[in-house]
Length: 290
Ligand SMILES: Nc1nc2c(c(=O)[nH]1)N[C@@H](CN(C=O)c1ccc(C(=O)N[C@@H](CCC(=O)O)C(=O)O)cc1)CN2
Image 1 (tube, rainbow, N blue to C red):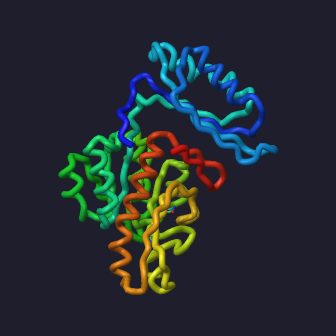
Image 2 (image 1 turned 90 degrees about the vertical axis):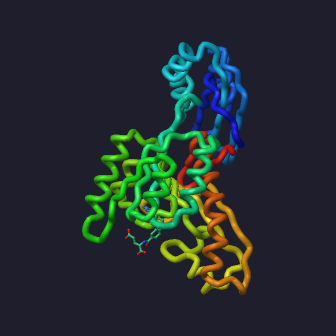
Image 3 (image 1 turned 120 degrees about the vertical axis):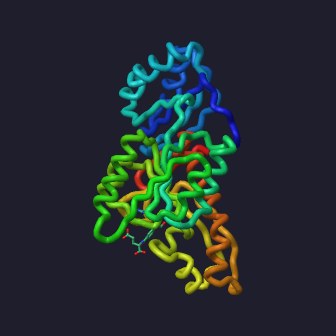
């Protein structure tokens, strides 16, 4: 949904043990700073000793004065309920880096949404282990960085990428059909800030060549899964999935072609939700306040 960013709007995201009084305490805290709550979503895993998750969007008068105060003082509520919490302003335009290899459909979906203003991020860098997409990327006015990866240089290549990402102050990373497995050392720099699109309906067909595996299995559905990257290949917290009905007449090539649409739909949704701070992670699962 295309919503222009509102300069006086912010959101607070909360995770804590479920207990009475949380909603009242949070809403009263915000009320005391004249915040007007415009959206509130919450989820309790199990009222008997489960977890509580909440996302509140609010508008603030005198934003420049009150927002820093709220950020500084919300710990009064957070500490009382032993919350994990964060407060984000809609003024903040997140800086997103994209990693690609040779497939361009997911990349182009993100670039189109970005250029149309639908995806409100900055894209300071697109990084690839191949040169194939340089002209495409630069036609959108986005800097392209070719960082080749092979068996012998993987550590150095990742170090170069990490240095670039840190220097560019990147907030999150999207792997748009990037076909290199990131090391635990790389992932540790960006916990729950790397979104991958895996071209299968996970947990089916983890790893390489999922469409070939799907064809050999004779599936009647294929799919795509957008997930946060962890050390466990294609097993990170799932953010979004999309499926497509197929049949015995589909070749592997047909599955790949049909799969492109579900891949780019799932990835774009996941990126939008992450960008809008609508995704909370608990264990190896997500809560998406879409
Ligand atoms: N740490 C992680 N890195 C990456 C993940 C992930 O979940 N965790 N997802 C992949 C993307 N991907 C599937 O979506 C994928 C890409 C590549 C391979 C693979 O086996 N590739 C090579 C080996 C490459 C290498 O050793 O780096 C191969 O074909 O043998 C599997 C899945 C992106 N990175």
